[in-house]
Amino acid sequence: MSINARDLMTSLFALAMMAASYSFAVPPDHAGGGRGGGGKPHNPDLYGDLVIIDRDINGVPITTLGLGPKDKWVQVPQPVMLGPVVGCPLVFTELEQVGVDSIYTVHGIDARYVPMVDGEIPTEYLACTTEADFGRLSAVRAPEMVVDHALEEMVTVLSGVDQQDEYISVDEAGRLVVVVYTFDDDLGFPVLTSKTIDAPMENGAAFERILEAARLYHDDVIGGLPIALPVHPGGHGEAGNLFDRAAAMLGAAADKSGKVGLDETLYTTQFMTLTADMTSEAETMFGPPFEGTYFNFSSYEYDRSITYSGNVCYLKIISPEGLPPVGETLPVDVVAELVNEPLLPLAFPPLEGSSDYVGGLSDEGDYTGFTGSNVWAFAQAADDARAVIEWMHSHPVPIELEPYCQLAQ
Image (cartoon, rainbow, N blue to C red; front, side):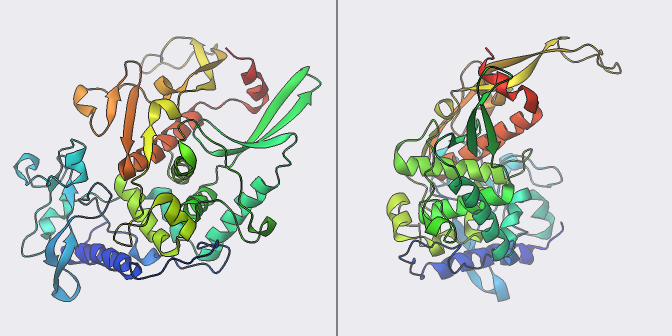
């Protein structure tokens, strides 16, 4: 996508102005939130031309004086580079580093400003900016009624669990699952069958509802009663569990092969105008928004090794070992075994070099660990859920073998 410098700054400025306009809004003191009870418009016109910018530890943009709409000098976000960019004429190591208040400085990441000239980014430097890649997260642009229907669908399924031989759980990635417990006469033992709620739109709508209302519900389903959400490993208190659920839902709403980064996370919350419709319960649970606009993730803490400390069932190739030589086809006879193995080394293998262990990542020997807090950790938690979903998608268990996962070693 080609854009000129003024369009880029106008788009970023428009997002800032949209956010500022909501700083004067009074959060509704009711259980409604934004959906299933009045609704609110999203901001689809602000999608596109949004790039990675400098932010403080809470995700609030760090701005500088620049030209905004109608050539007026205003405070504008500052695009950053996180390393050399192909097609960019600038020498990364010669650029100005971000300041001590930057979230990148706090996390030990070398980030540098894309320089402005006369208050704007020159056309020849536009290739140096990095667009936030939303992928499937762009579904938040869908009409309100579409997203509301997706939320209603999810809540309807979850509210139908009878609590006797069914219950709500989470899968390895933290997505909500309806589990049914039955006795299989052919196998001769009780088995569990499950239905994972994996629809991106449903997960995106639920992500929004949880953060703006501190509970998952829909006004038109069982009288608006909230769904009792299961606790996933890593949950620490009610707010922590809600954050965990929301992070997994954001990961499920994203592209499996993409990445949920800091800017994708924060832009998405702004497009959904989460802070405009936060209930008083949500503000009490999570904390008031920063500058009345930016969602408050400051109480969130995340440890990958705790959240993904369990095992995963999959078909492991026993023979042949490794991939066939280039140009040769795989042998016809492939031996696989149904196994339960630790998830961490499978989904989060060690990184290639020691210099990659920044921003809270750590070398734990057979896997890469992460610990962190605030919005940086929330974005990582969402991306970790996405990564686990991608791994599971690449290693499916045939449905007829799923009951045997209970017996696999």
